[in-house]
Image 1 (cartoon, each protein chain N blue to C red):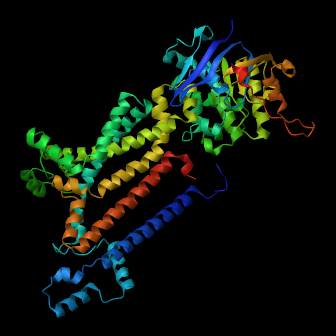
Image 2: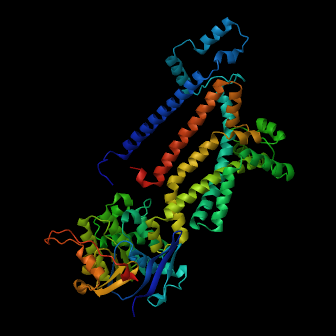
Image 3: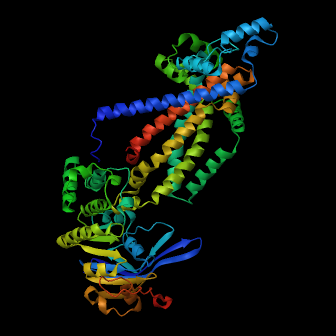
Length: 276
Length: 351
């Protein structure tokens, strides 16, 4: 049985300028595998990820024919049931640790929050688990990081803390929403390697959201290409070079290649008919 | 996290304290400078306001000499600062009493009223603002907005008079103008040791609960009124600060961790809301401590606002200057306090 099953997911926002449809009928199945979702800004990939956690605030609205996680209907779940899923079952790593960590709370308090509040662990036990989680993301001085505030950490360190925090309850599914886009290129690879290793070792499902097609292909089993709120192509990662859809080909072509010809990069061809 | 500040914590604290004290002293002298200039600019002759306009030339000359007005300005300022630093703000022209002693009598009344009003304002305004921010557009939000708007737009003297008419005149639920009933007024003067000058505190310390209850019945209406005004402001600011924080990404993080909404709002968002809210509360407290003249007049409240106003009407310059300095010191003090609180709440402000 699949871990996550999404059929005809729609996310819309009732704004003063009229109805904005961010996601328009996305369907996919996910097992304990790694699924990439690729698209430009505004293609609806982030909203798809957040809709799975039902974290879209009013005036946003989520509709779907079916959205089930491990047999549980997410559309019908109460807010209490959703809270029980968030964290221990489904977790999410966001783009920029500068904004996704609470600036006025110590890193340690944020790491231990779930353990203390939900699992009712003692301070000592929670502390030990948090230290272990920081060690798992290869932070060398976990005791010191626990006592630090987020603004005292570098971007790479912050994102490792974020990953550690989200993986503490050992979720079945991790949604990684552009987890390295805000980081320096030099630390991107490091953070990705850490994330990859942990996801593989623990055998969790992963939804990896990115605008970087090649990165996603290297990292995932399957790739969904989104355009204007719709999936325009779904393909296995190793078949990426054989992508048929002109939009996917366009995304591939507008990346520079080291050692490649030094011509101006082609602009992305956008055709509104693809997303009808 | 930086190791470059290798100096011991003690010397660092001492250095910081000296810095704070120096900046306080400079601000205070600046404040004195401003009041000094004002006193020299206003067209009130200090000698004439003391002696009256029927004084002889010899008397005027003698008084000028006594007040040091023949000295150069910089020397006069020096004397003024030196006396002010020792708590000597001159002699009140009307009562021949030291200004500082008069202020010591009037200021506690204002302090008591402003403190109670601010407690009301915070205790009601913060939850109201949070409620409005978490459900924007809901009926709760509309009510909070309406109540706030009324607090903003209704003249305070009108509200005060209507309050007195209804709760004192018609219903008789509260005490009338003044801080105590006339009978208790004398008793308080003679039977209660005045430690703070604040009736609520002094009577409680003395165990005179009958008098305490009477003081409560008198303060509740003006404090409620001023508290309502400060609530209007605080709830509005809280709403906008909270809305801003709830849109931040770390709030999503807390929700992803499965934290209940109560905790997301009151722990995660509130700690961040506190940072700007401290300034708002401090400023609104300071503006109340300045003395709400209209409220004090309507409720016969012998506070700082009416003291300064009366002194101004009577050309009583030493009293006006003394009162102004006290108001300035209140602002300096509250600024310092909010600076300290700010650093306690926001780790980014500490370095």
